[in-house]
Length: 171
Ligand code: NI
Image (cartoon, rainbow, N blue to C red):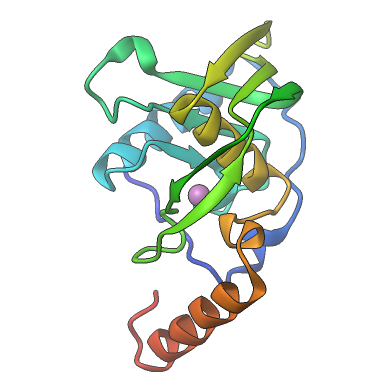
């Protein structure tokens, strides 16, 4: 089932999400399936629960955009254990469609998370994989990629979005 993606301006995107404590339920599995389906339908490579208006610490990621099933990743209650190096690259967000900016991120990250059954695991990511994980984990803390760009660029984007809202083109 496709879920509605909320856009910038919705307060849920800027709130801290809460830890998931109920694992292995049909509801959680269904939510993960729905989030992948919604992400692929919108040609995204990552989607966090707050983007579908749920304040839960859950994100789905697929840097291959559906090309390689082995790249599918579900991170529940994830934390970054360590970061290394830096990279600069373009980012966008399904909640801020039409806007892309260069964002500085760590080059490599080590993340600890739980799967749908509540089992803990650790994984390393680098380059695009690390970038997506940092972007999606930010969402769980109510942080959007435009928080990482210059105030000037951020204000410009906000102004453009305000115009889109007025024109009824931002819903
Ligand atoms: Ni995003």
